[in-house]
Length: 149
Ligand SMILES: CC(C)(COP(=O)(O)OP(=O)(O)OC[C@H]1O[C@@H](n2cnc3c(N)ncnc32)[C@H](O)[C@@H]1OP(=O)(O)O)[C@@H](O)C(=O)NCCC(=O)NCCS
Image (cartoon, rainbow, N blue to C red; front, side):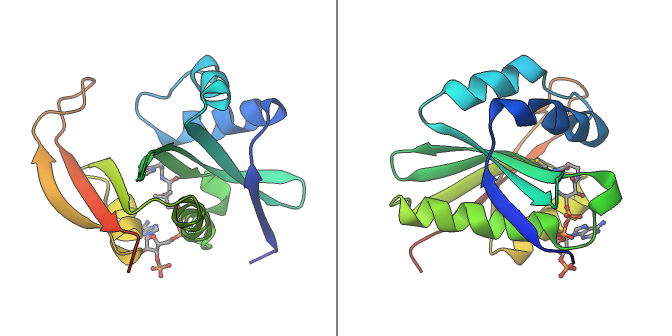
């Protein structure tokens, strides 16, 4: 894989984040949602770049001692090259450094690539939220990982 740089997003990244979002999710969030995330004290978006190309991102919250991952996505042209793994490792590291002891997330029950990504990073399913997603009533798996080990 070409060198990957992972760093906090800025407003100039919103169009590229939106492009990846549109390619990646059934009910994509709007650009204004991501603009809002850049303003919230507890919210972060980190982006992965290969050269000048933005190839992936992760939107997450750091709330007291908890990391909550809202979204992670890789541009379809760059999937299967370890981008999400690198971004997730980076985010887990940031959370540990800020004193988080627990990481949580929800994922669609049918999203095998994402579930495999999270399991590979040490997350375990602890709960199923029935009909959690409003667009199609799909169940969510709630996954957790301790960050102190
Ligand atoms: C899930 C997603 C982020 C993975 O991104 P990626 O950059 O292609 O993933 P990586 O190449 O870093 O793969 C890391 C691990 O994820 C898992 N994985 C990734 N793609 C997979 C696939 N198509 N099938 C099964 N496992 C997969 C594997 O465990 C892989 O580890 P390995 O390479 O050692 O087998 C990407 O498919 C995506 O953007 N999907 C749409 C958005 C989404 O559903 N996000 C998750 C919910 S927020």
